[in-house]
Amino acid sequence: MVSLEPIWHRARLDLTLTGEHGEPDIYLCEHSIRVAQGALKIARLPDIASQGPDEAAVVAAGLYHEAGWIVRLRNGEAQRSDILIRPTPENHREQGADWMEKSLSELLLGPSLEKAAEAIRTLNDREVASLEGQIVTEADNLDEFGVIALWPAVRRGALEGKGVRTVIDTWKRRKEYQFWTARLNDSFRFAAVREVARARLAKLERVMVELEEQLQNDDVLADVHEMKPVS
Image (cartoon, rainbow, N blue to C red; front, side, top):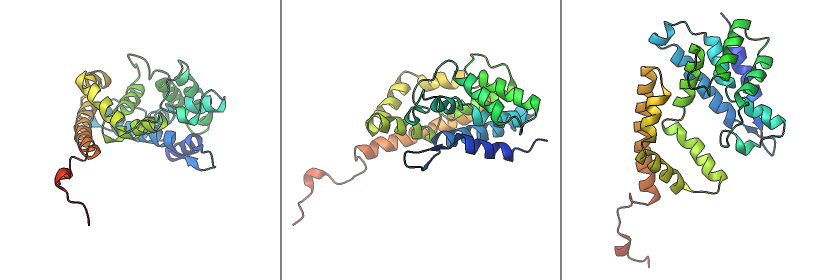
């Protein structure tokens, strides 16, 4: 069995960027690790594990599924503030898969490396053929559900000079137009993962209600019209 630890270690080095003052920028790396961890756990669900997924390929594909950003940054085609925010070109997955194949060529056996590359290249396909590709796709989709999804939403708002109200209003519009219902139906082939997404979505909705309440100070019980000035 292939040791996964060297793959995790290499990915952390490959995907951790450097900030303006030399500080580590882990935004892309953290997302990638989260997806890879989720993909590995999905692969180990009983119904899915019985199909014999290649765990090494699943981890590698999860870690490098957004590695195209690194290539674009190195080529001067993107900025750090674009990562996971701006649209990506059609060859984004191809760039990431190519780079992963080079970076992990000495750490991952040929068949597993090929499966990982195929998984990355097919992530944007309507019908993902390979089991490993579907597992990583669902892990990536799952990362858009739940409270964790607030982090990129807040980051986008901060970069665009917008406030908390924008995050709340976007959530409300998506809910009004049944966006999340459609995403639940379209994004998950595995029933167990869909149920996790549904549970995360319910938790996020509770957080959004609380967020709006605090934004408007609705949790402050005192009536400001009856408050006496401090002498």
